[in-house]
Length: 110
Image (cartoon, rainbow, N blue to C red; front, side, top):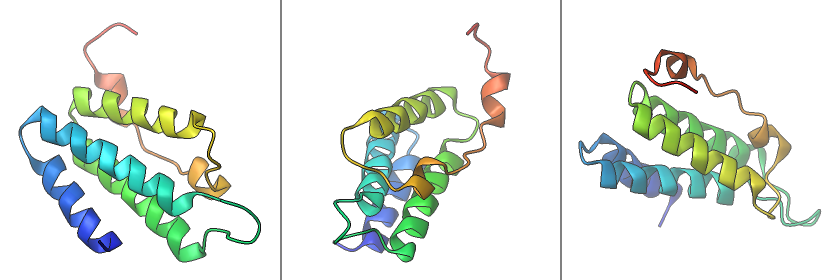
């Protein structure tokens, strides 16, 4: 299955009003971004196109979770899990700026 097909499925899941499907979309998006940006070794580095694609997937998922605290929290948790995993994620993807302005508007004590 191509990256474009996977993005379409992820977007569809994230557009669902059902939280179960949103979570599947978040997991799929973060997993796809991790696979695209994984550095296996010096002989198989991530290409600039893969890095850009991984960043775009993360930002797409973030955009589709906008204003939904449960989705935003789950996305933050999944991204943290991806970054803590023993696989090597390309540094450019690790430092992708993800706007999180709406988190400060959550109605819950941190």
